[in-house]
Length: 151
Image (cartoon, rainbow, N blue to C red; front, side):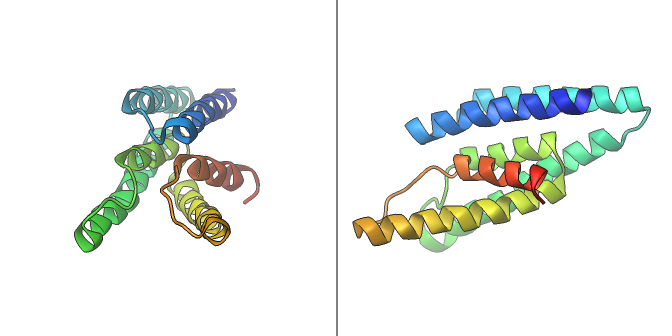
């Protein structure tokens, strides 16, 4: 039952945040932090009912790995290209997905999101002959859904 609640809450936040990101190119930190706190709380409750710390440690590890990987990419882009390659909201967002899931889902999610996002960017460029920034959050959401249900 708690797994169903956990995934329902995750999907609700992913839907809300993806719509906001598409419309405003922004992942509001107050919404992401609310999701992180709620997701972690559910993971703690799950651990308590199971009599195990495993859901809590898995959740924390997923969040840390998600934030760490995108932080490395974010700061590398800043150092190499002297500009942000992505918004900081994407870092928090992948960390949020990690809190709800685990580090394996986070890594699969990032790979899938990067491939789909790159294909989108390339096709957009080929069609319009120009490059524009586009939101990465919806691609992370798609990557998470594929990771959870298909892989």
